[in-house]
Length: 586
Image (cartoon, rainbow, N blue to C red; front, side, top):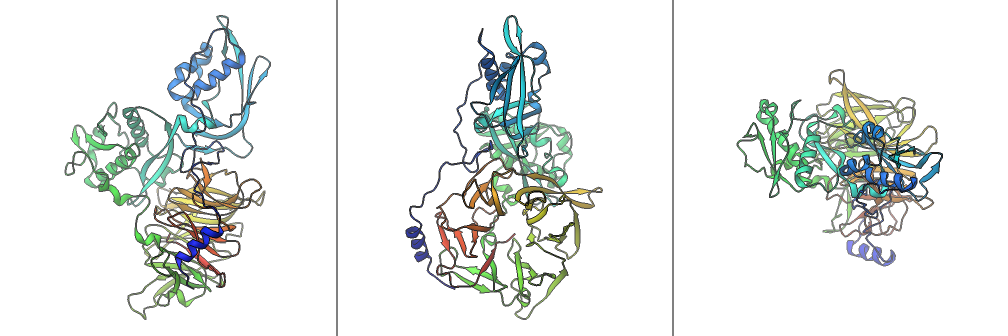
């Protein structure tokens, strides 16, 4: 079960040909880019209409002007007075696949017909359009003072997909999970290239509105209802001065710290530090006037910790700890002989984020067994177990050590439950509308859920996200706010959380399956950076830690991981060992 890491690296380099690290190549379905923005579009400054130009020029100029939220006044110059008065561009933005033949003449106007990529609603949420959806609108033209003007306007604005990264910036608003110990990012799109003061004002105003519909009441904000910034958020030498109204003055000390964490983390994306006051007095009087970002690292949504990067797995149905993955020693699998989990054969294995305990689904599929990985005493085999029915997906732990288990996955009524850290159980209401869950992975915050689903209609797999929210006054849990990501992929086999969003295994076009990095909201997708793998990926394990190395199981059950040098390394270079089923904490 050993081999030298250096030899494996050389083998990958020599056998795999020239390893290239892509710096571009974003697959755009109109989405924003994955890790690096695709700046292939050409930004066009909105200009008012010229005199005596034709119908196509008027509509083209109108579309260019409406694509820029800072040029809506210019866009209104292309309209009749009645149309200009009724237009509400802030209500939504329709992102469409702009092509040379998207505009055609029709009767007394111009017809726009294009593939609809997404809708960005009034809160800035990216909502992927259903497959086959069209951006379809007829721009009726009418003469005003002998000049052609647009007399019919769409609901909201239209934006060509190649302009998204030039006009809009993806930002995260930060809220807290229910236990208020970790921040949860809520991605929105806001105007690009604003002066720092305007950008800071807008993002804080959006934060104080509360979470978007994607997260709903699954998260909480420390800002009391009615909390606002007084006029604006001026920026001086990289410091944003956030002056809150007196509403926030009623907060207790602990909640003041939570609100400060939300504001500091949200502004940090703009490379701004924060000075926060309430009624002229510091929000946190015992802290420095300019709040240091590291003060709030304890709420990091990536849940930093060395335990997150440790690889585990099953070998011959026995839980194992993998050592030497970092190249410091030979790689080997060490059975967890002292753990009560080793007393039962397992089909799947999950480990807490702290790496102190785990859970297995027994190989007969009848039980989930929970216990310590390394009990204090050698003979301490304490464990707990509970029954499961039918097909049980690999379980998943959140930051609190709660275990999320979905069984009856192959039935008409899949069952999702949470085994709480105290040993009690909480049912989670859900309705998959007849589709079958293939993969379920909970985020460390215990709020966001990643799913691979099989469609009952097409029998094809797709990826979606969901949110754990509450009903009945917070007493009951429900899995809702489902968002199919509408990825342009087929043969999807697996997906996992990563530091950049998700890693998804699927095929694009007629090519074989590849490994993709996908934004949390589905707005961008690109090949996972690194050398081109010489294997066919089947399953992936990863987590949100920035130091975790993605691990892939191929279609021959062999294991590969991506090193920090962006090279793929084989766990079993000779291919003469039994199949190994990998897992990371989470």
